[in-house]
Length: 322
Image 1: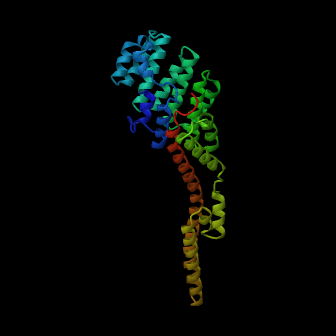
Image 2 (image 1 turned 90 degrees about the vertical axis):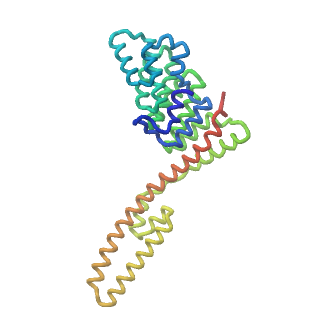
Image 3 (image 1 turned 180 degrees about the vertical axis):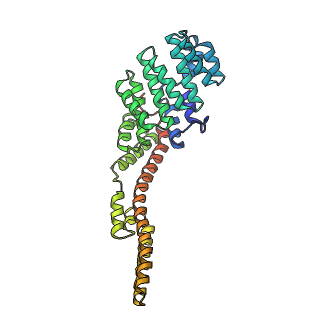
């Protein structure tokens, strides 16, 4: 299992893990496991492939022993002493970045992979590391930053397969950012030609879901507040919260009845004071509730669409272009 994949799968890490949520990790595992991500197995490559001969021995031992801070310190020490060649530095920082992802520390992995990226021997290795770094950005919760990296990679990478993989990962980022039109466009580029059967049905369902979400008009918090200003409860009904809206109107009617009854009984001052204080406090709270519900309702609907879409991604992984 690659370092990036294991790091994303891990539910908890050493203190600094701040993953954006289980749903995103599930989606990423599906994408990575189906071969739609870049090759992120730098740790294995560093100990079994050509990089094994160039990774400093002590650094490799420290990484295998789990002392990642020590490995980073050793790489810096060797570089300061001038004993670290370009190929050694590249192999060492790349292996360290993959190990940091495996340990659930994507923030540190980002720095290590960025250093390795600057030392990459060729454009193919640099593009692969750029995608690895984008995965680390996603794992750390910075989908906006990852989206920018993947958009650039999708337009400049020489490898067509890498460009397609960047497109899919960029679609997952856009999904998490609730940019449904962008997610639909990016995911369509990979999965529109999905095979017949369950995968095709999943794609069509995903495409319809994202199209509906992209065309959905969010409810305006300002309109909700204005409606509740004119008639307390109307803003909640506009938000789709009929129960609270009708309840607010009932309380308004009850307060008005109380005031009229008190006035008819001759207690004009007392009725005005008590009803005024009650209705003013309730009125202000009603405005706040209408505005807040409109805002949180938009977020809740977008997040529900995101979760439903992410559940379809495992069915689509691996069905795109070869």
